[in-house]
Amino acid sequence: MGVRIWLPFPMLLLAALPPVLLPGAVGFTPSLDSDFTFTLPAGQKECFYQPMPLKASLEIEYQVLDGAGLDIDFHLASPEGKTLVFEQRKSDGVHTVETEVGDYMFCFDNTFSTISEKVIFFELILDNMGEQAQEQEDWKKYITGTDMLDMKLEDILESINSIKSRLSKSGHIQTLLRAFEARDRNIQESNFDRVNFWSMVNLVVMVVVSAIQVYMLKSLFEDKRKSRT
Image 1 (tube, rainbow, N blue to C red):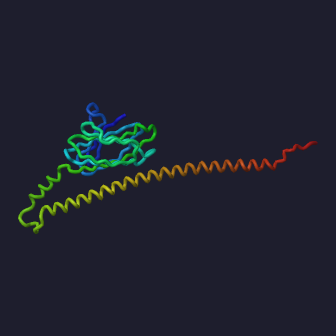
Image 2 (cartoon, helix red, strand yellow):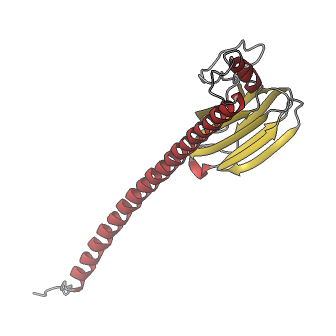
Image 3 (tube, rainbow, N blue to C red):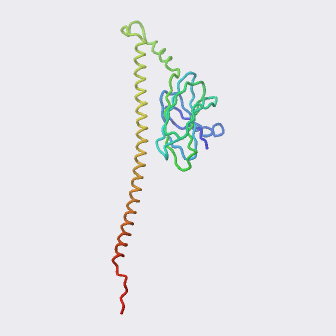
């Protein structure tokens, strides 16, 4: 069963739409960097839609944090419905596309699993969204004469954009590290449960084998001859 979702960025709040128009749909408002973590039940598929302008950059990175096999099917489609990326049974992936005007669809498919649900993390990085030019125009109206001590506006903007880019990159790396940590922790907890289970099985087997050995040794020394009167 497919589920289509629209989530508003950066708040990532679920928005309910009339089921007649778009059942279970969710979307994202323009933002430079946003991430989302959700649980995908077994046998289900969820799709998300991201509106994009012309000649922008859309980067999608996803990871399966928890669930049997740590794998998922991923599908990315253009506004015309053309398949851009299709991956099967992947634990993670990174994809970047130069966009056209319209809504890009990306789906996570867990229909191949009948038992295990999956916890999925994904992050969207949107570049060239058409906001930088307006920001530069806003700066210009505050610059008069030689108030900037012979520093050019372009130098100031370049420094600000460099700081902004590095801060965004730092936040991106921290988000990925948290995702890796969550996946590693889930793997460790799963391994811990397996070790405990098989340790108990081995303990039970050792006790049973010890009891059988004691019984067999005891039976070897029993006098089975019947006394006659």
